Amino acid sequence: MSRQLGLSILMFLALPAQLLAFELRFASSAGSSELNAELLAASLVAPLADKADASPQDVLAAAQADYGRLIGTLYEEGYFAPTINIGVNGREAAGISPLASPGAIQTVAITINPGARFQFGETAIAPIARGTELPADFSRGAVAKTGTIRDAVEAGIEGWRAAGHAKADIAEQRLIARHPTRELDANIQLQPGPRLTFGNLVVRGNTSVRTGRIRDIAGLPSGRQFDPEEVRKATTRLRRTGAFKVAALSEAEKIGAGNTLDINAQVVEEKPRRFGFGAEISSTDGLGLSGFWLHRNLFGGAERLRLEGEIEGIGGQTGGADFKIGARFSRPATFNEDTDFFALTELESLDEESFSADRFKVEAGIRRYASDQREYTFGLGLQHARTEDAFGVRDYTIFTLPASAEFDYRDDPLNAKSGYYVFASVTPFVAIEGTESGVRTYLDGRVYKTVGAAENLTFALRGQLGSVSGPTLATAPADFLFYSGGGGTVRGQNYQSLGVDLGGGQEIGGRSFLGLSGEVRVKTGDKLSLVGFVDAGNVGAQTFPNGSDGDWHSGAGFGIRYDTGIGPIRVDLAVPVSGPGENSGFEIYIGIGQAF
Image (tube, rainbow, N blue to C red; front, side, top):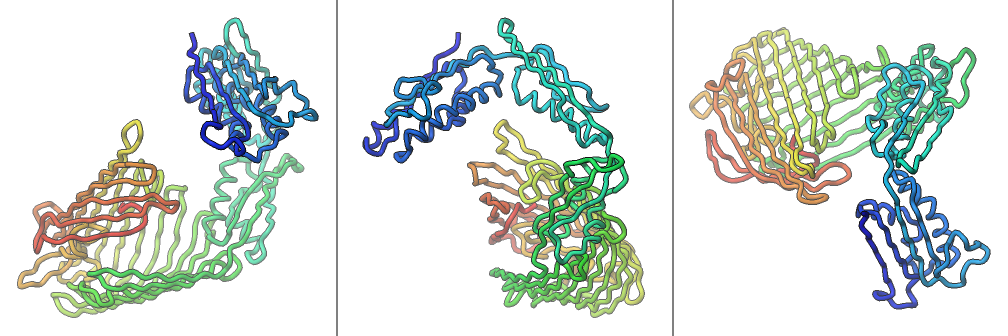
């Protein structure tokens, strides 16, 4: 027996009569409050009840349109024998001529009896391409939802499209509702059409970026079998250049000669030049200023040139002022559509509490996009520096071969709830003068897990590992060594406050670093979250951390996150927990995005 659920909206009890459009009465025998909410949301006439300026003609038109909308909503949930009555001033809306609408409407009554819920009887969709996976719910005995039928049709068509049949479509569709058994038979016939190959990429909308370069960047495999994944990849390649405000690819409507299919590329270019600047201030780090100038299309082939400079530590308490100026050039699709070329140069001066360094480097290399989640870089570089630390002043020149790999399988880089992230870099260096040859390695791994029915509890873990092998602690480049402390390693501890203690108040960076961090994030509302965290770091004199070498320090605290459209605003308060030195006071960190 179905439960009777009635809902009556008597708006004249709350508002003056002259402000009312009409009284809306809604009654449904559906046993689900969720279904009734969906029905009310689907209705066009319901929101007109509180609009005093709604004309009788508009109300009647909305009421007559509601039959189809309400039936469609019920079909979506498997109810194929509903009874719907919509009364306007006591008359069935369907029987009122639009040319004879009432001069005034006092009441609209919607009465719904959804009837019995249907299940699938016979289900068939053919032909389907090899490897096509149909929805599990598209089977005998499952609830007969029209959405499930659409999903099955989409899976069948996409299966053919992945096999090169770009124009696959529905040939015939038969749906039979068997009321005595409350079953719905669904029989769909597909028409795969011919197997197609890619034709030309037809580019429209470009004014400054050359058409030939757009085709090179997109990398559409003309002459090869059609694959919708290749169209998606080509779109991604164009967008990641940054040269286009809009880059949209679509298939030609008609099949070309020889069963080829052209692809249309509609682009809107970004303004070629951009500049920006920023400033930040800290009670301990002092004032920081930064700025950049960017050209997105330097030579007409979506080449990027970025000039940037920054000054940090002005008036700070963590050493003197640091500055850096640099330039970076990159050219997309240089060796193939997924490999970019880059060249950079940097001049940097660091004045830290434990060391200072003036260094200059040049580097050139490639960035390889293996997939949407995986990137690799390989480079060749030359670096010269003058450093000063506890071992004195040294000049060194090295030849470097930096390489890195980045795997990003997070659901959201700024606010991850699941997945993992790994970044690894290896930089072999060959000494030309002033040091010894060796290798610097760094690894950063993060994993995320959200639990609970409401998915409001997230656990996040991070591990960092660094190592310098080859040179001794005394001969290693001072700016290659590791420190711990601050927002990127151990919150609550001062920036770079932990190194290797040489005694006599002298400290230097370590040849090894191990960092561990854990967070518990609790979502307390639509926008607000609370976070508790613990960080720990170890810096040692040996090549690899072994737990007993070097010193540990740790910090802990809590934070608040407020979700925005560009990521959560982060405010963390942390205190030191253990480690050498003074373990009192607190640090505040503010930023956009999670700490990791």
